[in-house]
Structure formats: structure tokens, C-alpha cells
Length: 445
Image (cartoon, rainbow, N blue to C red; front, top):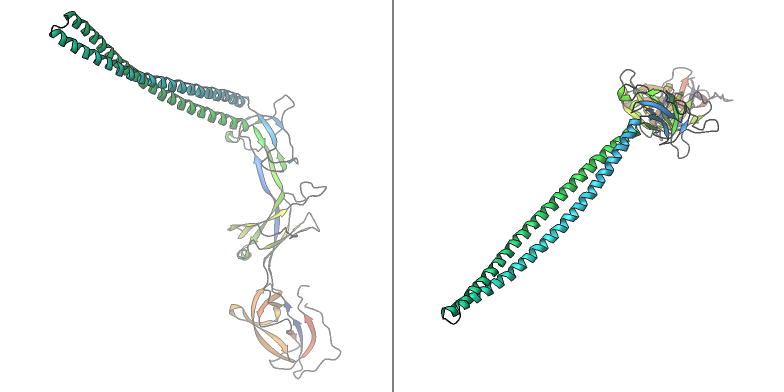
């Protein structure tokens, strides 16, 4: 019923003899609301598997344990991985020493090349000196020969000068050979530099390979350590370590047939509430759609917008399930904590009801009971009957949303109008009627 009947002490009599009940339109449009079951899931959840096969020797947590990101949760014993790391570390040290050795060879070769270049320079200077001396002896020999030919000197002096000249010539030739020899040594020294640098590059490459092998070994070793991927709670434990100094359960790695996770960690500071929204509401989904979450296990508690914490649709799948014709929608809810629930009062698997306000009503519209619409046409057109000046008349209106109880009127009515709810008998437009009582359009309240 809409409103209450308030009979007047004196009712006016209509000329038609018909009495009508009226309601006043309520201001504001009709919001599109979808109420669906919701299930609580962790915001993040990870099954931790072993990457290396071995014996479980350490496990610091159990189900319900609170863990932080990066915390070591378990260790698996694989001694050969540590031995491999030790061996590869030794190889890296040897390769690094080889690089230093090659750098020393380069320095020695460069020093030798500088000495060879200096030797070439000295040999060329010596050649110039020997050449000058040979030319001097040659001139002396020529002058003595002229004097001997003129009988001015004895012939033995010419023989003596020839010996001096030949000796100077041999010294010049020897200096030239020294230049050639020095240049060859310089070339050999340059070749040694090239070789030493090539050896240095090879040593660097070998060191890079050794470092890569070491990193690989460390990765394999680190596979024996399981760390928490984020801050949360351990919700599953499948194996047990041995007593101190003893080996525990044997763990198979995932790539060797291990199908059971050692541990499961769930993030609990924020939870996902999952709703399956029916096809008819899917077109109205948006990140502006607000949500109210009520959980059956937490009666009296409503999760909704609180200050800056906006509770609204966080994401949706963009694809419907062809079997159910519904779409997965998620609402992120901060998980409040209390003394009894330090990890949050929401738990994985809880369920309840989620009210999604997908679209707000038109602010300038009014609402009337659905039953007052006496005629509907296409494109949202309709007709309602109102009492104006004690006479009844039909008014064309433009209709919006209709939730089955109320209908949204976009144009044609105001909240001051008196809309006919029912009549005591047939009545035509323009007839004078009596109003039995004013009613407020408060359907559903």
C-alpha cells in the first residue's frame, strides 16, 4: 500500500458521484540495483611447490601462521647444489686471476714494444752516424788516390785509406742491419700486445661463463629455500620436516612429478568478494557502481563506503559464462581486524549478499507506483491520470526505469501533482471527482 488513508470529516460530492484516491509523486529517480550472492576469496593466493627434489629439513610455519613477504618458510636438503656453488665460486676466482695475469702480460708486452721502438730509433741514429763517417772515409780515399796518382804520396797510404773506407762501409751496413733487427723486434712486440689482449678477452669471456654458471648454481641452490611471496597467512601445509638432525619427508620437484604444494599462502589484508552478475545487469557495470556487502557469518556488519574507502566494483571479466549467462564481478574489501581476528574478520570461503547500485536514478525525475500508468506506448511514452482543479484528466508522460513496484517519470509530472491511484467507479476525463484521501507514494515502505 502507498501511504495511509486519511478520511476527511467532510467529503465533497462530485457531480459524477465518483470518489478517487490519489498519491503524490516522490522526488528522485529509480536507481538500478542488483542484489546477488557473493563469495569471499583471498586477494592473492599462492601454492608453493618445490623446484628441487630432496628431503624437507626445515619448516618454520604451520597452518594459520602469519608470514611476511620474503620470510623463509621451509628448506629442502640438496647437498650437491651447495657443492656445485662452491665449485663454481672457485672457477670464478680462477677466471678472475687469469684476467689479472693477462693484464700483466699486456703491460709487459707494451713495455717491450716501447723498448723495441726506442731501439729502432737508436739504430736509425746510429745508421746516420755511420753513413756520415763512411762518406768522410770515402772522400779521404778519393783525395789520397789523387795524390798518389800525382806521385805526391806513397801507394801504401792509399791502401791504408781503402781499409779505413771499407771498415766504415761495413759499420754502416751493420747499423742498417741493426735497424732491420730492431724493427722486427718492434713488430714482434706489437704482435705480443695483440696476443696478450686477445688472451685477456678470452679470460674475460671465460670469467663471464664462470659467473653465469655460478649464478645458475645459486639459483638451483635457492630453489631449496621457499620464501613467502607476500605478507599473509599460511592456509595449507602438506609435509613435515624430520627431527633435529634428521631428514624429513622426501619432496619431489614439480618438474619431476610433484603435484602437491608444500604450503599455501594467502594475502588477507584485502579480500575479493566475487559476484556472478546476470546478463540483464552486465551492460550497467562500471567502476562507479557502488557496493554493500553483508556476510552471513557476520550478522549486523555491513561493508560499504566509509569516508575515503570507497566500496565499489573493482573489476569484471568482460566475458559471460555461456552456461549460466552471468559475468564474474569482483569487489575489493579491506579486511578489518580485531582482537580475536588479527588477520582480519573476513575468511576465504565466507559468503553473503552483495547489493550493487549500478546506476543512480535521474535526479530531476519523480517516482509513482507502477499501477498508476494507464497506458504505455513505445519509446518510453505513457499516460497517467491526475486530479487538477477537482477534475480528472489524463496526462502524457515519459517513463524511465520500472522496478515492478515504482516507475520513474522523467517528464510530465511534478511532486506537487495528485496522481490517481484508484477510483470508486468508471470516470471520464474532465469529470469532477471527490478525493477520498491524500496518499504519499512510498511503495515498499
